Length: 59
Image (cartoon, rainbow, N blue to C red; front, side, top):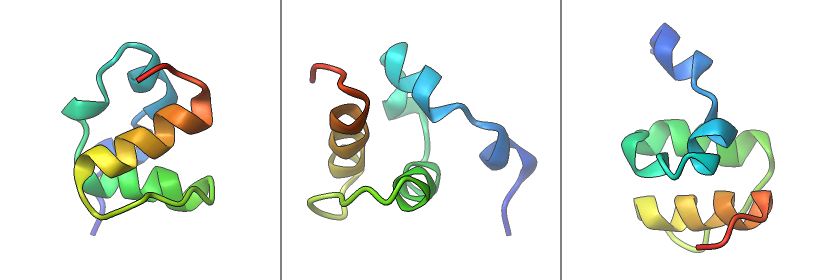
């Protein structure tokens, strides 16, 4: 069951503001699934790295 907050999170804005670590793993996972990104593992940092690479943000 998703809360409304999960659906309204702007992952791209969080990435640009360097706030991805504040998001939950399900939020990051959903974004990766939505954008068809492959995370290299199952840890939170793996999803963050995949999103940053996708958006062209230096890590």
